Image 1 (cartoon, rainbow, N blue to C red):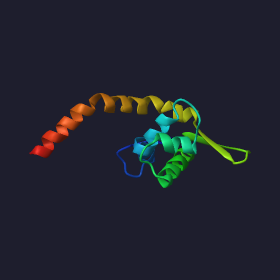
Image 2 (cartoon, rainbow, N blue to C red):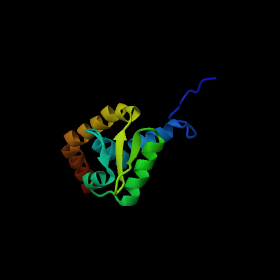
Image 3 (tube, rainbow, N blue to C red):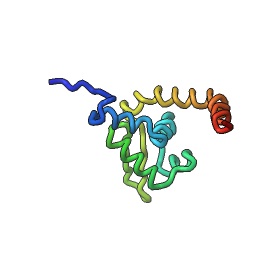
Image 4 (cartoon, rainbow, N blue to C red):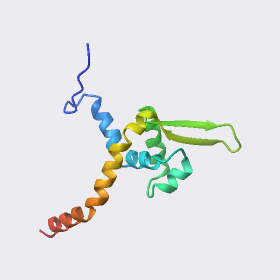
Length: 119
């Protein structure tokens, strides 16, 4: 028997997928990994405002969901690289589109917020 995902059903696993992909930090990690592997420190430096705890949680969640791989290199000190998987690359267009929309329409959104707040 096949599963029919229903995003509007609170018990459907597709909601968890949307939560992961739609999470602010997940979006930024995916975008940061778009041009290739990164070390933890490189990601922390690139994503302004993310705490160590949140970066670690986000990377673990993305790895668990199959969007990111974690590779430990036997070196001193140990080196850990993160990279998008094929599945992770498949969401890249979505999050890149979101980034493009947000930057293109930022002024309009800020103007709407100012109008709303002035009421």
